[in-house]
View 1 (cartoon, one colour):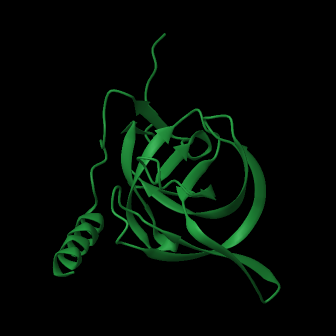
View 2 (view 1 turned 30 degrees about the vertical axis):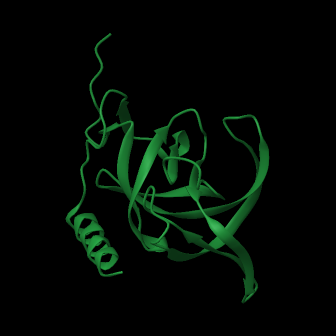
Length: 164
């Protein structure tokens, strides 16, 4: 059967650089996980805030692998609370937010569950609900590369860490 790529579709590897601009996360490595329905993001110090009749989630993120010195403070509207079963079979209630993600030059709104992924290699899992219009080549990594903005952000972080 012949199959042509949709012109709007992108080929990505099993791990890619992503941005979550509404959360101030310019560059974060994401592992593509077609086995997970919803994407998840490393978050800690999670708090709930009621303001103007709306519920917000305040949380912190270590966006870089193996680096706990860089902290990004985030705030997002709470969309839901869900019972999630992780890959080890453990059930956990997680907060769910909706935010924009830029991956391989495509910006889309996705749902993210918040959980502490400190012991995990990747700070973000990108689940199949966020992967519409993408084809995954499991033999490749970082096919979309880094944007100029991501390169600049990472360079500034390295300079800051060098001063500390």
